[in-house]
Length: 178
Ligand SMILES: Cc1cc2nc3c(=O)[nH]c(=O)nc-3n(C[C@H](O)[C@H](O)[C@H](O)COP(=O)(O)O)c2cc1C
Image 1: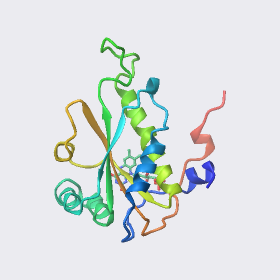
Image 2: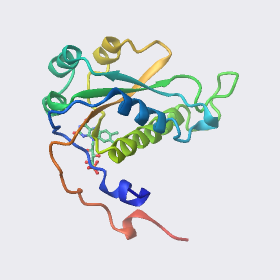
Image 3: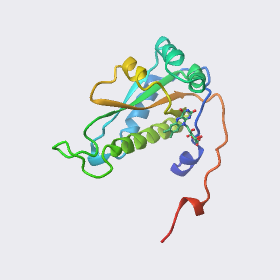
């Protein structure tokens, strides 16, 4: 798959096939996502991979809204994106480097997240990024540390559906050429 095809054909998958995902594939996807660019190559993005069905069940039943719980019900794997705090966008003395403050941490997390999703897509795996979850309970349940921030939850598995792309904006709206 070439890069443009990968970018255009990746879709958010909200129903998954009943097929296990190999640990080696997950590791290869994470290794590929590690090549995402990051602030001064700080590589603050990390991953907590949940394959255990009982843990997944607790998350589905107690930490998600109905829409995302339905997605997680069929997903064989969940991946929590985490970022190390206080590094990306910061100077050595702990002050912010730019006016965007800790926004750079989320910027880097987003790039890593999309790189993860594209690498999964290359392997025939589907993903959906979920921003809605219990932000108190889930990080605690997963053992996210004090100096870490959970940035998103990704459902991962073989697609059980092949949705078409939601509409995108026209070039006139997207870009201004000066
Ligand atoms: C930061 C972020 C949070 C999102 N949260 C959710 C979510 O909680 N539940 C969900 O079903 N989709 C979620 N999505 C997926 C978007 O709805 C989806 O990317 C968008 O509709 C475009 O569809 P596509 O990914 O198939 O191109 C999220 C996407 C992003 C980038």
